Amino acid sequence: MRRLRRPRFRRSPFLICYWGEEGLVFENYAARTRTSAGPLACAILDFANRWRSPREFFQNFPDYSAASLRNALDQLTRRSLLWRSDRKETPVEKAMETWKDWNPAAGFFHFTTKDVEYEHDPDIVNRELRKQAKTWPMPSPVKRYPRARQILLAAPKNESEFPRVLLARHTWRQFSRGRVAVRTLGELLWLAGRVQRWVSVPGIGRFALKTSPSGGALHPLEIYVLSLRIKGLSPGMYHYAADRHRLELLKRGATRHDIARYVPGQPWYQDAAALFLFTARFPRPQWKYRFSRSYRAVLLDAGHLGQTFLLAGTWLGLAPFCTMALADTKLESDLGVDGVTESVIFAVGFGTRPPGVDWAPHPKPAHKR
Ligand SMILES: Cc1cc2nc3c(=O)[nH]c(=O)nc-3n(C[C@H](O)[C@H](O)[C@H](O)COP(=O)(O)O)c2cc1C
Image 1: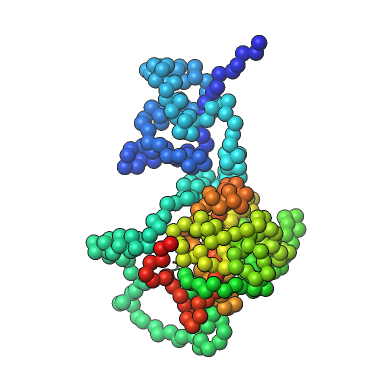
Image 2: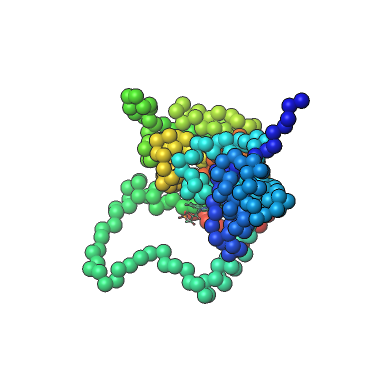
């Protein structure tokens, strides 16, 4: 009979360690676990830089009993700080290989900031802020140099179309119950999402160019469309094929409850006609930019793409909005993406404008359903 090999231990490659208020804290940003632990844990993790047998641990820590070392190994394994050789790598850990040049800085930030719990009641948020403002006034949104020489500037002639669209762009949070023609949805995607031209670089590949700029022209963002009230398009989840200007049906059916699940704590968006979910395919920039600063470019790309959608939507007479308060993991699971090589970043959407207004911000009194 073959003897079973005893499991060996190695520290997870996705650990960050720092001093928090509770003392030394270890976070595994791939498993998204957080543990405060003492100096023995630190010494064990330091020693576990490669696969080590229990016997090696016993030999290296002679001042500790075998029982207490076993207990420490168990606890560290349970909290995902140590890996056991008889455990299969999870799909997330495997996919993390693509992040190796961006870790730990970008990976730590990206994965530990997913699925934040938001306060759902805007009245509570405002009450808290009013209380806070009494002792900690809100910082000024503008900066001035009052003693510097001041140069007066001209304003644009805003009777032309472009300034009018810029000035009409607002975040809408009330919508009428009308439907939007699928043709308008197509125009919006054509203007904001479509590949407008290709540039071939011999020996490297083809780069897409769109109406928004993108770091290195790598366009990491994908667009998914949750269609709710689009005339001529069944409710459901679609993927936008940016090169062919088509929607690919991923799942039939969508209701306002899906919006409630995907953009939690923002009931005002449940009357939207469509929601556009932006995901980032990280291997695109990771292939070229093998340093963590490039993570910033992905976020900047999302901002540019978002603004292009908002301006194009405004020009089309829609009531557009954007939000980053998203239920990341729920969305990723419904979209069938792994959350590592492709992860949700930002969302924009639109509804139809309520009649007779040029902007409908937060519903009053606070919208509760
Ligand atoms: C990065 C980002 C995140 C945002 N997140 C939310 C959000 O979670 N919920 C929401 O209702 N609006 C959200 N907004 C919209 C802002 O609240 C809005 O832009 C801001 O109040 C200024 O109003 P305006 O867009 O009408 O000029 C977000 C905007 C940006 C750029």
